[in-house]
Image (tube, rainbow, N blue to C red; front, side, top):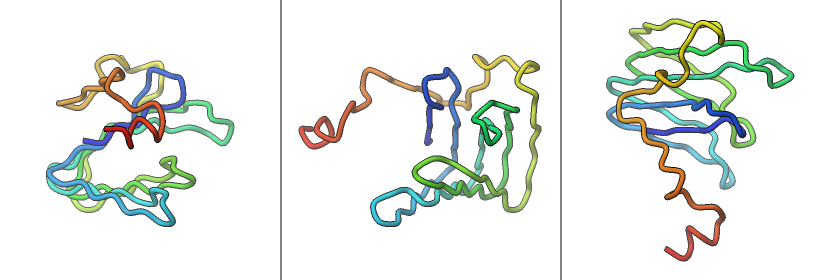
Length: 117
């Protein structure tokens, strides 16, 4: 499972699958591919970074494309099932994929935290 917290909000983009591969270019994440029972929760934002809706979907393969380390586009390959909800019509606390655990206390705060472990 891959989880991305959206800035200082309590919203989380989530990607889950039997396998997840991440692809990097010049040390920055460029793409993630989830295969096998792939599921996704993605918070869509407009050009002004305002939330416009949340998509909950599943497919055989889900690709997430990144720009400057932030998810920009989600592609679904074969067997897409999903719904996009307006922000006001969904309980965001219940919008978590099975197995979701944020574990803020265990997250590294800097590069140095990673290097010291």
